[in-house]
Length: 147
Image (cartoon, rainbow, N blue to C red):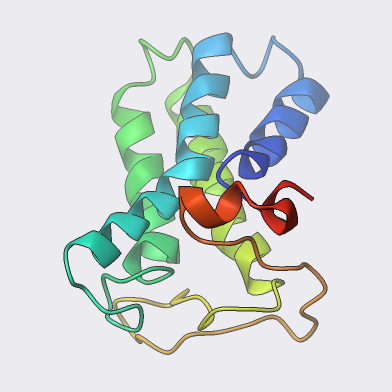
């Protein structure tokens, strides 16, 4: 199941596959941060924002627009990330987008607002083959969450 921890596998695999000559350690860390950042939207529950709201869980932070935004932010910091502007944009942008794409394959929740802000429609992939992870630390640390 994809979790805030396992979403980092995508940038880790890309970094390993592309090598340190293409993906610096700093860029790798930025990609990992991008891959887990969409799930920071769970704070919306504490703020009284409904799951189905555009800024609820799996809403705006799980969109292509959000991935592009983080990619542009990485592009602006290419020099400190020790990479080119294009590599920073593509690596962080794709790492962030991978989160939403993986979540689309899960079997629970309300889907992903991939096309936000154009549409708030929540989407799933044609096949939901990944068991959804429990939301919240208390549920995550149950037997089911640990499995």
